[in-house]
Length: 343
Ligand code: TRP
Image 1: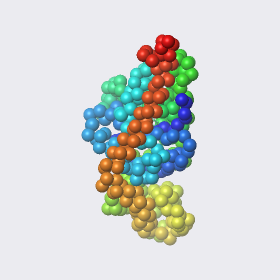
Image 2: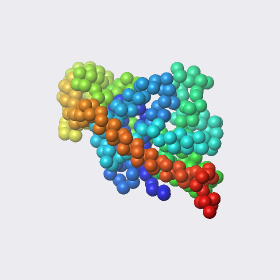
Image 3: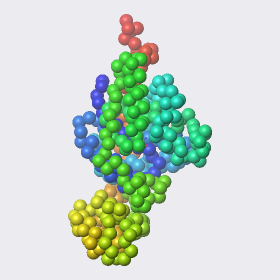
Image 4: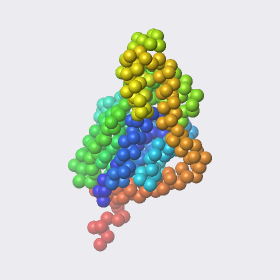
């Protein structure tokens, strides 16, 4: 039964941007070629923990995200893309695991703490309005991971405390109910975090500093023209420091042809920022073209997206049922099909 798998999840709260692409999707593309089955969860239940009042937004983004994922080159033949809410075993497991976690431990989870403070409008200045569901989402994420015997979990650094919490739950479960679950390990991507156009350490939708995979040409021109450069460079032929320039930072991501030239010319004051930005725009558009062509195709063929999600979800359901059977046996709540009673 313990077929090890790779599992990761993403919340459907917006379109994918370059931060997702270089921070996560690139790693997924490598992982989907491994032997272990790869489950990619569109975590709508988790998205609802802090967007419970926006069901339209979450619904729309499940489909949008599936389109983004496929357009980036995730292959549905290798990767099971599924919708979390369609696998009720995850919710069931969350209930069982919630006995194994104290409220105090959840409050101490650094990821929950940070997010709680970021969402003051929803949860109050001091987190006094936090919901049971949001506080407990690490438990639900542990259910996500273990339902698929996920042992390899590609995640960003911000997710490590959630994985640690999952490992604790697994150990406690095994200690009480007998060896049943496997402890997951994180896989961190090479590009841990992608900076924003404004130089912020993180690119994020809510930070307003992201380039989305779906951005059209005009938007990209506007965004890149406004990107932060070395502020010491005043005149076109002043030498500058590419290491503190966001334009050079993005050149490094999408320009594999004349990166050295860009760097050297910048340092020597032989390249103006406007020209440099224009060159980046051209490279960015070239990089996004195949992704956007696929996006267009999928947008015109919603029936294909639906079929892919159905197939992925069916496989995920079968796998979760299987795991659930073992878990219920260990917990002695498999009332009507216990082998010792069958005789
Ligand atoms: N919490 C993750 C995020 O916000 C998404 C996620 C949901 C996830 N379920 C998961 C990640 C399981 C890894 C494993 O990005």
